[in-house]
Length: 276
Image (cartoon, rainbow, N blue to C red):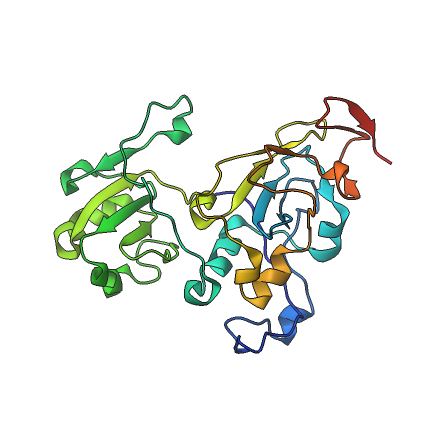
């Protein structure tokens, strides 16, 4: 996982959304906006919505430009885990779903070792792996087993999916395999944001170059379907002329006043431009 975000909302709840403590910030939260870059660098995650209200997570690295409005909204460094915890807190209300399509298909040959994984179909194959893993249950009711409760395998959010569970300690599944009715395990596994409907863009160019899009979600998450708190937190940056499904690269400077660590930025036209 990588650094991400958390913020705050002063927007009142819709009439259809009860204003309870699990959704809305309390007075102490309202006093301090959350989520933002480390004070010592530009390295940060930030969020944006496109013209259709689809949500994108952007990772600047050291060189990527960040819209000025982001710095006006977010003031504290945080992590991607914080965002995921918030997003998955109330999936029934937010409508967030985890897409398990082809999740357990055999791995194709990958150049990058980080993209390699195994599909385990028996407890003996797990061994002493300390890697994170995702597993499928034969019976959805087994997901309520207290041994799968919070903290059982380290921090692991409950995914909004009927029979698929996440663990951060694969080896602990060996002794519970038959009792829980585990069908198969994919190891290692880190949450793919595209399976939660999010677009992900990353900048690896030290010349403040464009962000490059990653996997396209099969079912994009739209901000209007989320709670008022999440809508506020994710909509600080809005690209009104972009559809993330049709856009492979995004250069913030071409759409909004932005900030970068360099005095020049590389446009999607391949030309260098001066920071105004």
